[in-house]
Image (cartoon, rainbow, N blue to C red; front, side):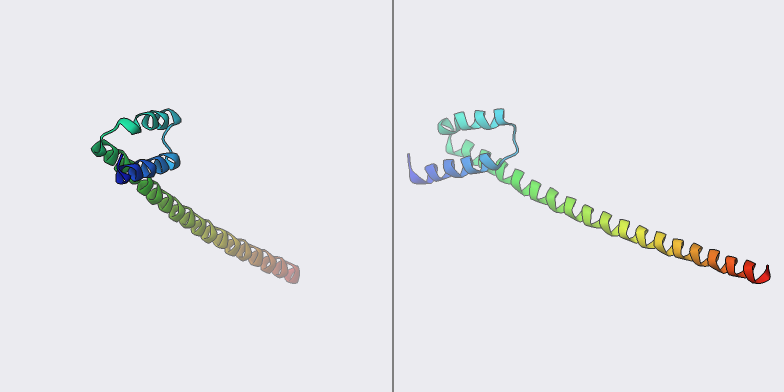
Length: 102
């Protein structure tokens, strides 16, 4: 077997090991990898690379969503604190006014 093909098989095995495919599919690909044509091997490699790329995109999207949610919750927390302070000030002012008038 030529070195380039061996390198592709090793690269495919590495991608497969990192893949989130179900173990039964990983085992199936592993068992067939030695008998695949180079074109078939290239197709498997391309698919596994796309899987990795898509998972990276998904991870970035989820991180952004998480950061956005944190920012929104922080804004809500600050608004609640401001409203609580406003209500407290109004209560204290009313209590003082009632005691002075009282």
